[in-house]
Figure 1 (cartoon, one colour):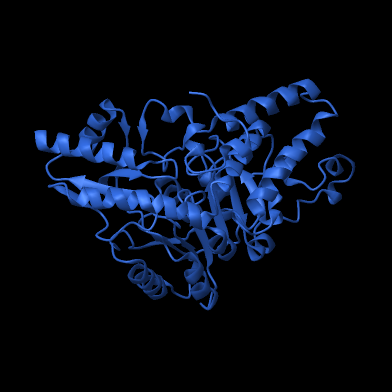
Figure 2 (cartoon, helix red, strand yellow):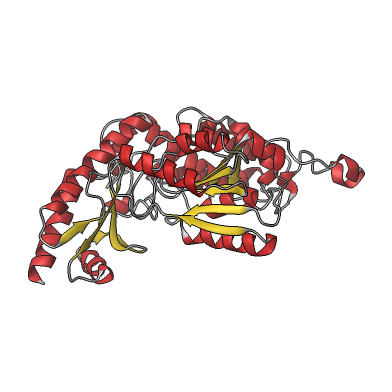
Length: 409
């Protein structure tokens, strides 16, 4: 396979797939876990390492280049094509969990405050909220959303009603993923934020956006949430170890830095001369900590450029849904297969079970055939993810393998 290395060559349907070495020897449906990196993103990482080593790596001339790489990604992610909140509201993190936890733990809590979490949240976020509640004397309550399997409008109505009913005068935080990692439903983040705005305590809204950035349009939700935490290594097909969190203006006014380092400070040198002058950044950078791997920023920036070349977020979602719809319809024709959603999936996550078959065994047998999916524990199921790099033939290969395996059983 000859990789493509320029934006011009990358433009056009299917071009991104040609850049991904990982797709040359397997049929891949694990974008919700980790997306394969394009060759030119790997090239960008390597080039950044080489430039930094040539200039420094800790010499004066290197710092403008480091700043240029980081600032370029911050501007791109803050643009309307992505999070749409402006660079001043973005803090870089290592992953979604740290993007959630760092600002969350800096909020002013009082004993007895209530945290409302959906029952579809990732264990990492749930564990962080449990520990916060234990330390601060907070109350933790869960709102059911996993059972919602209807249309988008039905789901939105139910979600808004359930959270509105669950909110009390002590509710200070609501936690809800944008795209549920298990059932694949899209949650009404902007509409929920509007409801919370009119609640007596105006609870903060924390959104786990692990499955949404790169797969569905996110700007409206990112602008509405107080904490909107993303990662670059899933649907954005960037490197692992780099994430970003969008923070609201009111959170920046109310939250204090938690894990603090030199990048949290507006002027790290002022601390030595006058501690009184050591001030944190006035924007979201106060939640950044210290040294990051700068070449990863160049890699993610290139992956985002390639996604932009494939069309707008809405256009990419249309392509993603074409393949998830094909898969969903095909699964419905296989005896014994039960799809978690009785309606076509709103994005690229398709979860299902097979009667009498262990999800883990089924995934292992598919892997032996070069088809890569994953199991989920809650609810127990198999999850397949379709992206703009997924082809009709990929889906047909998966459906054929499932028919053969289930018929043989």
